[in-house]
Length: 366
Image 1 (cartoon, rainbow, N blue to C red):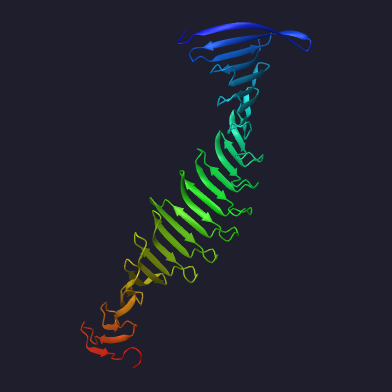
Image 2 (spheres, helix red, strand yellow; image 1 turned 30 degrees about the vertical axis):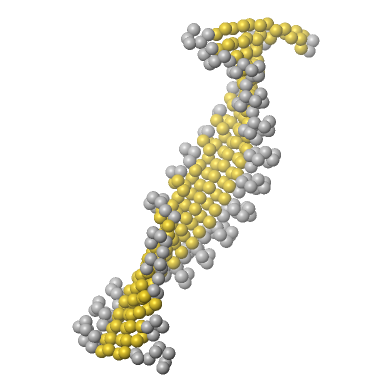
């Protein structure tokens, strides 16, 4: 006897059924190996198994009952929480599991139904709120979930659809947010991690907003089609939920018109105006977002031609390279009303001002 003791009591019970007598053989097993539990086996008079009852805690109620037909298993019922109510039922045909039902809330109401093939689940239905309507359906392949649909708000319409890969990882989630029967939000996953979100804001079947993740750790790129012309007008780049860069097609011609760059604390650091695909003007801002300087390449040769200087967002002076030699030869100064008060000109382009013009008016024409 290997670490357990088996004591068998055989009791012959004679019963009268339909006017004819037959003998049932009842075998009681006490298994010390698995604790003080009791196992009862019931046979017909030919020795064919009819039922097995297992009472592990010996409280007089069998928590597991197996029923047989013609010697083959036909059903199993279990009481998993020891409340003397069966909450799981398994049904068999030709020794194969074909279906099961569960009462997951242990309140006497079946709320999960599962279909099996080759002893593996192929379809499962759930009534999570126990209103008598199926609100979740899951499909399986070789026991692994491949698709699931839910009625999240229990209104009788499925609105949340999940798709899985061959290992059970989520690869796609589709949602009908406004309950019109059309998908308006799609989430895509890569190796179990969220990689993209698409939104149909106009409810026309076209996704105007897309969020892309995992280009690098903590990153997210947001694409927006503001006017619905199927061209993205705003592209925003985030790192750890902080906006770092934004590209904008302001006139909706399909070309980026300006690019904004942001500091860690969220304030704008600089912006670039784009003309014909090249940077025309770069604007610089202080930490409070006030304009401090601008640099302009007027002829798109890659060199700065104009310099603009600001004080708390107000233009104070301008330097201009009129002969395009890379050095300023025209200087202008402005007052608080941004009226020009002084102009200097380098006529021979030696870097020294040869002409000075001072505006002595008060800026109001007097």
